[in-house]
Image (cartoon, rainbow, N blue to C red):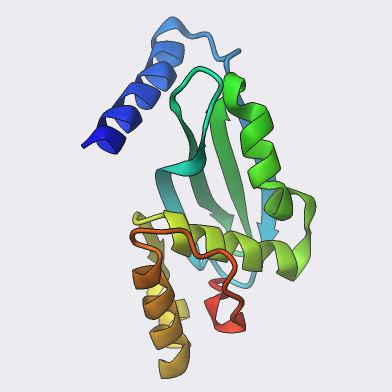
Length: 157
C-alpha cells in the first residue's frame, strides 16, 4: 500500500509539470536501439531500491517505442532531484552500446516492468527454453530485484 501511494505521489510531480507546461524538473536519458523489425514496446513506472534525499522512493519511467522497422527508442524519465541516484543505478545501461546495452535493458525490463509487449512474430521465434527462462526470471523478480542473474536467454531484442 505504501509503495502504491508513493508511486501516486511521484506521478503527481510529473502531472504538475505537464499541467504547468514546465518540464525543467523532469529529466530524460534517451538512446536509440537498432533491431530487425519492431520487437518490443514498454510503458512502465517503477521504483529503484533507494530513497532520495527528500525521503520519497526513487522512481523512474521507462518507455521503449518502436520508431520504424529497424529502430526503437528507449527513454528513462525521472525527477531532477533523483538524477544522481538514478543515473548511478542505470549507468550500466546508459554507458553501454549495441548488444550489451540491449541485454542490460532487457534485464531491467524483465526485472522491473509489468507492462510491456513483445511482437507476436518475434515471440514465435523464441525457443521453449528461452520462453521458460524469461518466464522464470520475471517470476523471480516479482518481489525482489535479481539483476545479478546472467543468462543470454533473457535478451528480448
